[in-house]
Image (cartoon, rainbow, N blue to C red; front, side, top):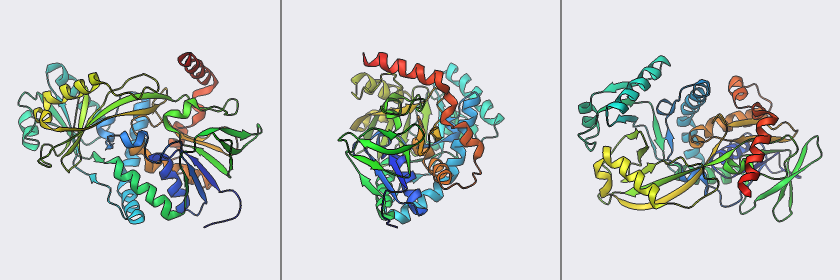
Length: 396
């Protein structure tokens, strides 16, 4: 519903997280403007593999347990989120409820797979061990040298590119004002609250509340109030997109293994990932990464070398020190963070939008403990200062 004056909400960042928040907020009756430094849906989210895989992704340690709870909750929201998004946009989203196979090639990897199986069972997760023959019966294209496998049948995947197109269309349908090629230069604040965003061309954009969903650029934003920030770093990931000219059939399920993964899209296209490189904002693809991705995949899926290369992409995952996102008030009135989702931006988009919009509307949060885990203030001033020093050193 249009109204005079500034919008209720200004979202900075047009990836999956930012557009999901903008759409959900507009659906709840808020007036919303979204600004994006480049084109909406053209950044990190577009490069993502789109695995909705809390079971396959779970990691050891306290932070891993907390991420599992976040991921499991958001995965449960995905079917309803996708259905509403289809209705709002009129576009299909290409979700695939096919499960994940975790694979081992040798005795060392098999031992690790057994350890991973016991860990997941201790958490009550649905996972089962397969004999190599059972795994090859499910996926005949797997190599006969396969040593062991686990199945996580509840893990799914989705192609982020149709999702981003649908989110953009849904935002437009809900009345969100989208402004692209509008990079943020800073914030207008008086020490007590944030009053407006300042764009690179000097324009001042006022709003009731500003949400910074700026992904890997969050830790490099200038013009923030003293003591306000999140230690987000860019983590480079290179991904190959391949196509089978014969159509689908090589692989139905997502496969994961030491060194990478293969995600089938269901239309004869496959995504191979994913490197993890601490190289700042280096967006250059490399021949070495493409070689390693193909070499690792070929050991378990020999037919991958017969596919055609469509694209070698580079994305920047927004990582925090504990690899949990930063979601919540920024410590100054009128400003929220929704960033630092690392490898899980697509998976966590529905939950993040729900947490942010409910928080902005002052509603009671069933997931209050989850918000406490994601509190941007958890890092403390010392961590922020260390992050700023590392950033300054990298820019020299």
